[in-house]
Length: 107
Image 1 (cartoon, rainbow, N blue to C red):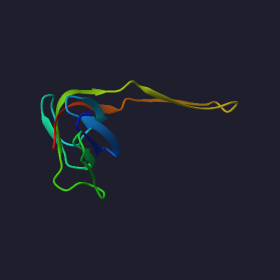
Image 2: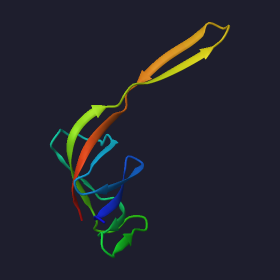
Image 3: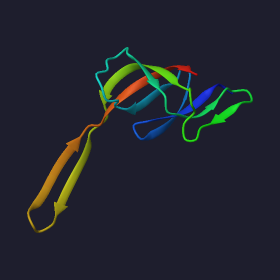
């Protein structure tokens, strides 16, 4: 079993391990492809052998490092509001931005 951790970012939790690529919510700030990011909100950490550390709610001093590989937007979500017989029709679309991050270090 490999070393892994569970991190929290963008209001969601992700199970990550070294070398894995994760799609996460866009992070505030001016980020570019190739930038490194650090996730300090580590909920659980496992070394892959016999030690598992659980935070309350986060583990002090633990961090996960990654590198931004892609900045893009997801497929369009179309929202339609319609009421019959009342001439009411609204169509709206939205593309959610995301980062694709490759995990480089779990510490």
